[in-house]
Length: 241
Image (cartoon, rainbow, N blue to C red; front, side, top):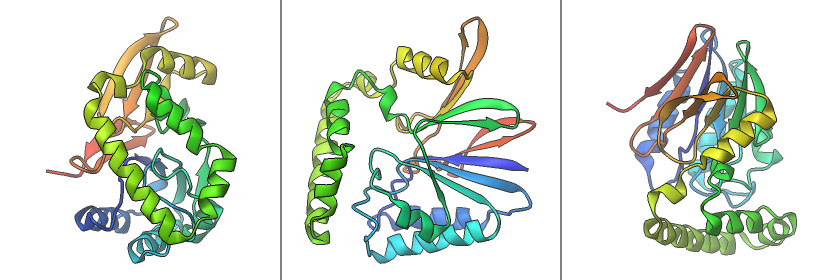
């Protein structure tokens, strides 16, 4: 048996090829081989509330429910783009919303799961924005707006994000090494799995005199990144040729 981890799919009706790839990926999952699937944030390019009625979003929810109905445990973590995913969405697709961070036992190895954006502490502008949109009062006010208005605002925020990202040095948008160490120490783990940075890699290092590992999931723009974990080990795969 194995457990799969993915992140940063950024599903969007304007990118039908990625929607199709993800659908094929889900349809191929076999409960006799895969016991759990973890989606570590940014399943969607944007999520404006569980009353989202776009056909493509409903189709993804339906496909995820088929996965859970086959007996595969489905776990979803909020990302920086879909932090408004709520209990109604989770119930609709048979998933469990998990905390960020979350500590699990992965075949005998204590492992910390994160989306990864909180580790990018050098990006002060983003961290300030994150605090704003994660505030419960801000979220209540946003979700109270008409669906059309939320769509308009989300499109504006995405455009602003693209402009800001283009203007930032790449290293600012990567994780801060000290933030990584702090998070792993606080969780009492030597293994961390996260996404967000779109820089798939397995980083081996030493933490408090013991071997440690940080596994970074890639996005689904260019890589179709999947981490396959089993009692035999961990393998970072790509679905794209």
